Image (cartoon, rainbow, N blue to C red; front, side):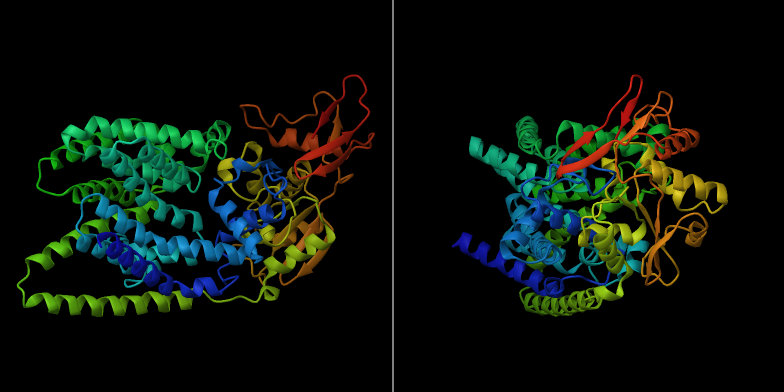
Length: 583
């Protein structure tokens, strides 16, 4: 009977959240082209059409291993749904992420119960998670962005396109649930299930994995004294098993690449490390002391966990200044995880107040709760309807530019910026000089290219920007004028390129310039001293790039480069003594 009632509550929570975000399922492409979901749709679209081989990713950063693009699980699931259901990758992405959003409240309910909350407290926690965003009360910027009575988690999905992060929010409570189950049951099966649950997080989202690490830390600290060491061993064992499962999708080489890019990507985190290298350790030590003290309180386990987890996340989120100070990279994004902890506390407190209320007041409180739920569900539902509007793709320059490139420059690399770059590969297989995602970048020179091409408007930097594009094998440059629908228009004064580059195409405010290349080959013969040491520890100078660009434009015997598959190519060249081959 207990299991049936829990199942009915879980189903009701799932149905409620499905209703809230129903429009998300009904729209293939939404009007938010400032959203990064274009990159995620691109991953699923390419995989769904290249199941036979996508280990090499030719679309971004001049080619890269697929595992360096983004952790793979969500994109593989979306690609599989698109293939099996015979729908577009965009539709499959909305379907999968809509379901994962709707499961978030269900997993919070199940976790709360496993951590000792009563059914009523767990239900109210999950209900609060469905219709309340505590972050709007703590973060004025969030309140201004989403509004006082709307859902931040929902906005992160529908407006900002963070499907992987939203999916990780549904996985995190399952991980804590699985660890608690392994602690209580002490069986190999429960430990394996915990490992599988944590592996799913490893393979879904990096910020979610950071938040899970903090959640596991808090879960260990608030355990009763007699269970503490066993909790440590279970957490370590399950995490080790999880990485053994996940390492194919997130191998050590990818971890090394991501870690090598942390400092350059996250200035605030780097500044915090430089100023106080041990500050994060001190914060966690203080949290551990607080957690130990909580053991001696009368609070149940779920409340101790919720209080400590909320305190740790709030401390990191509310002090985060991405350009100045962060205790963790992108710490401010963890405010949506903070809402899980806040809702655990809200649910427990609301249930306690209800249970202690006089008998006559309980029906009144229940009616007030029902009225609040109805109002908030209507608010959330209306917000989704306003935010998720279908788009006419033919009116978007991102789409028309992508289609022209596919038809006229198939397989040739281009440089695009802004939302043109976000959405280019959602529609075509046109390779990009950059693309997504910066944490997977293996050549530091690529970090410099946007600064050479986009913001500097004098003649010298314009010509130097073209040299960088030549060196990176770009055949075209996509720019966006005032009438373009590109959401960012990153390239300043784009008309300056008209003086030195031929115009290949222009439509809806986008202008595509041809970048001079002696041939379309990605391979070139060089003489000693002409190479650009892009993998050296020092920064490559503009003079070296200009010299390299000049060299590959000289009249020399060609090096023929032909793709033979998604990740394989054949190069034919005749090298004389002393010559080198640059690819």
